[in-house]
Image (cartoon, rainbow, N blue to C red; front, side, top):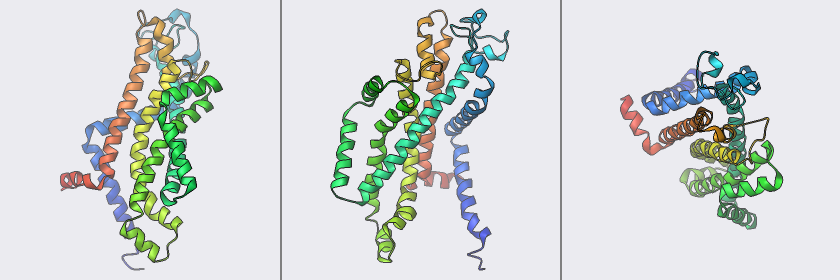
Length: 304
């Protein structure tokens, strides 16, 4: 085996790329803080939700609208709601539902939108025109208004909520992928691959998708924040997740009547929504810089 084909030699570029990405993340302090917050949030939603479920649902009228304190233990660090349930426990437990719905909606819209975008970008014809006109119809209606109408007609449920949020976000991915594919398919390296007998499927897997993926990843991180806000708004209006399940938006709605005497019931879920969306926005800006070839000179110069 030659030195070029040696596995250790082939692994060096991958390690160098990983080291460069981690180094750029460490240099970008806001992005590093956002990444740390999101990792902590993910662990809380997966592990903490199972541990704090009893405090999140158990009624304790002695702690009704209790102010944040440590006298009753760590559970009431952020206070209690109108039924004496721990706000901290409900934040952690509600994160699992909120993030789960957002993840499912983003993955569905990303998969469907990217697939349709590749199709209409590579093939021109009647089917592509129909898909684009349907996309125009979806984009002509405000996303929140469409979600309100559909959920009012079909009824609020987790499945319906994911479907509505996914459908309203599909055009973003579809149009982005279509625009990039139309531009990339005219590149010399794609024409060279065709001249050497490569099929459209091979070109798509080895050339188009790797180049489109960074853009999709950046859009997905921003879209994740947008879906969280949309879901919180629908839950606040009563058309999201229904009791006994709850999300951060539902917690804000439940604490609204008591905001004068128990502001913490509404404040902390709203703060969690704000910090999550802010962290996702900061992380998406960092991803855009890392994946954009025109911006990589910033990290190369700093490393040198």
